[in-house]
Image (cartoon, rainbow, N blue to C red; front, side, top):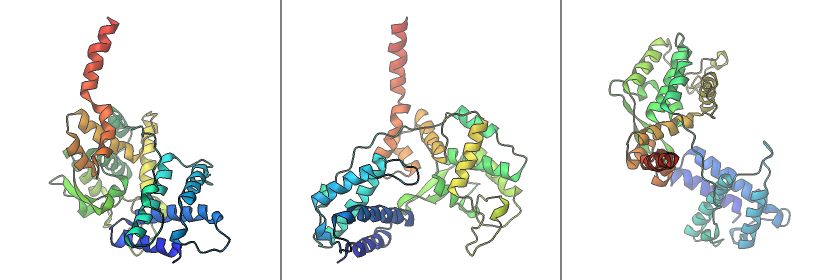
Length: 314
């Protein structure tokens, strides 16, 4: 059977049997399409590539070409993390073949490159306040922007989760609601009273009945579609909003919606929250993902520094 057909079967199984999101399935499709594109040169033109044709040598050549791959959009090589995503997709596909009893390359031979640890960028509370202070709240747009930033910081949402919220998603009286995150997993979100009040103020200023919680107020967004979501704010629009106020506030860090999620987690840990609780609030499947914050929030390290470093200076 042609490997292209098997890849399509694998992608369908991801969505139907594994319950992966459409975005994840699309990404896997892109990574595996690139895999096929990069190994095609090892076969005669027009040849049908079969699962049994995949060998350790083909894998070695693929990894080499992937490492040298030049992205036409920005003319940069793929990062170790992006290369890992390609290899994770390939390994998942090979496991799928093995499960179906189709002879191919052993999935255990697909090792992942060692990726550099990410530098976590976050805002201190006073920087968040500076950000909010730049928002003019005498317009509906200003009220919306304030509510967006406060909700990201107070609730620790992913930007995709925030974009998908509807008016009826949030219980402002209880100051809590549920979101569906990665892997279609639901988790509770809690917000403070100030954020709830400012959300209510924003919604009261609106004179529409559209379902989306946050609307794009640009004049070119007034053409309706069949979904009723024609004015729902996109992740890119929210990123632009946040970066605009960061510039106005004189914050030189690269601030994105995810920066506010980092800030939410960091603020919790700095104020004594335990790692497991923060993991649950963030919706991380693996505690290791949450542990990226611990090196910047460990109060013991600060105590050691203050005690011993200050003594050497006296």
